Amino acid sequence: MAKKKVKFMVTAFRDGFQSVYGARVFTADFLPAVEAAREAGMAHFEAGGGARFQSLYFYCNEDAFAMTDSFRRVAGPQADLQTLARGINVVGLDSQSRDIIRLHAKLFKKHGITTIRNFDALNDVNNLVYSGRCIAEEGLRHEVCVTMMELPPGCEGSHTPEYYLGVLKQILEAEIPFDSVCFKDASGTSVPAKVYETIRLARARLPQGTHLVFHTHETAGMGIVTYKAALEAGADQVDLSLAPVSGGTCQPDVVIMWHALRGTEYDLGIDIHKVLEAEEVFKKCMADYFLPPEAITVDPLIPFSPMPGGALTANTQMMRDLGILEKYPLVINAMGEVVRRGGFATSVTPVSQFYFQQAFNNVIFGPWKRIVEGYGKMVLGYFGKTPEPPDPEVVRLAEKQLGLPPTTRNPLDINDESPKKGAAAARKMLSEAGLPLTEENIFIAATCLDKGIAFLKGEGEIGVRKVAKAEGGGAPAPSHEAPQPVAKAAPAPLLAPGPGKVVRLLKKVGDSVRAGETVLVVEIMNVESEIPAPRDGVVAEIFVLPGEQISAKKLLADIE
View 1: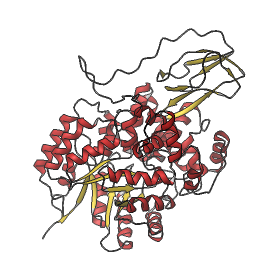
View 2: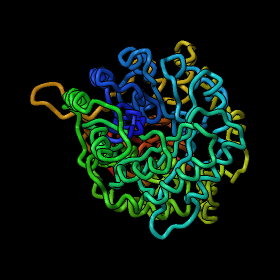
View 3: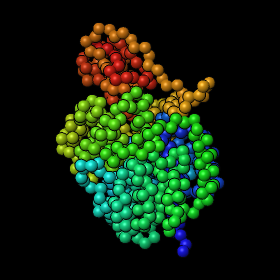
View 4: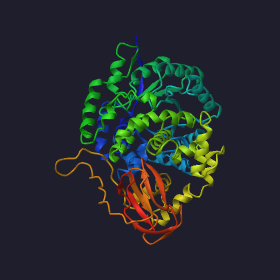
């Protein structure tokens, strides 16, 4: 009896990089592995998008469009190169205006991409309508998603097979054009029974012949068993990775999935020995990158968070850099409440980052003392409708702290009206910086803001974590704090609210300030925080510089 061939996409060079290295990988380092994978017979690759767009500008001082051009050249003209899009957020944490969403599809088509997987973390189908149409109209294959997760123990709300089927029905009723459907579990927490029933219901509801995909991670140790459940229920494709970025926080390895299917009616249709050879090439390519131990670990805490593999290492690495990794279990334990009170949006970027950042703030600053902007805007409705209504008290706190009223308006309409978003705002940023007004530059400015402008001006930073070598090479040395100055006796010192980095100074010594006026901006766990003057006065001293790493309660400035 002939075996059923299981299709698979190789996620190593996008999700694998995000899940292990926080998406911080230089292009030239991994291209030999792409060539080796191609020679081993693999032809469907995840090649960019998601965190691998911004990370190239933020941490690698590289252009993401140049990266996909190089990927296409090495993978060959017949390869299916796929990227990941976050609905109306496209490739950033914040949502965009219609013109930038259209430009996203146009530019990714121009730079070698054939398929875009498109999801909304809130499962708000309204956020998939326009973005999906843009993808299809620009000549790309559109893989529309329903996002999944298992709720932490003690939480109840949405996230059942029936709920996911309801989202799929809304996609069909909205007549969103698509070429395939993916059920995406970024946290790897959905239990096998739920996966089986969800895929079974979807297969029965979708038109005959629809290509059906299931995506998960191995973070909670259930990747292989849920993949087998999905295949038995009717899925056509799963996502697999390659060592050294497989298992743990990543997708299951191609080799392990091949082994798990031995003796069954399914087969990957690969030459396993050639795959092993390709993995050896890949291991050599990545040999000098720092491999965080949590990236290759099955973590029993994950079902209690749920923390996606693609976000876990990025956050633990930042906590490791800041010297506060011991707080990680406390943050994970705090995520259940954040999910429940936030409206049960799926824990996948950008929402997973909102969840982690809010849990982090609840641990560091006290419960709900400091609402993260992204989390706050989500519960207030600025990203669309959450699966369940957020907790009214959290909504009230977000409204008070962010100074924004709750809304039920279409986020696209809000963004189109905003003078800070869209192509016009991006052109203004570029013109003020004396930069060319190309479509690529407009998109970079719109999605990466100040850091994108810095890259385009030749002022990009390097934050790739490599194992230091004895002599030369290795990772760039981390910036060291300047010696702590002796503070003057001042009635109003400005102290860092947490460990992080100084982003920019808005005042200089001698400037007059009013109480509440922003003096400088710091970044804590990838979230910018304005540091206001506590009283009317004059800036007497500033003790930090932009780009400087700071510890919690570090003296930043004095106001006299």
